[in-house]
Length: 102
Image 1: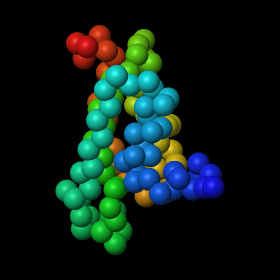
Image 2 (image 1 turned 90 degrees about the horizontal axis):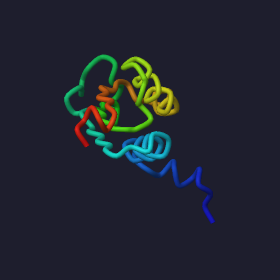
Image 3 (image 1 turned 180 degrees about the vertical axis):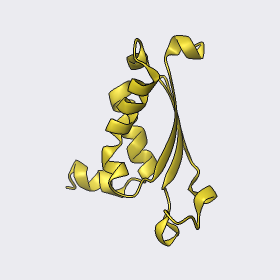
């Protein structure tokens, strides 16, 4: 039987990011868009690597009372492993349910 670590390695970067963010932030909305194709050929993108650039929109009650900087730090902290293994850039929209109107 394969352990959870092996299963995680087989997931795409987007799926791993979704799993980490959803689990920790209990997001009511979580949108992850791979925009790596827009950056193909850039100096920072080695060997036309895939899954390097993402737009993330997350709506979470955990953001209540947190500054925008703190919200972004929460997301970055949850994605540390990905940032250390090829994730190059993320664009973040982080709102509370009240701010999003939901």
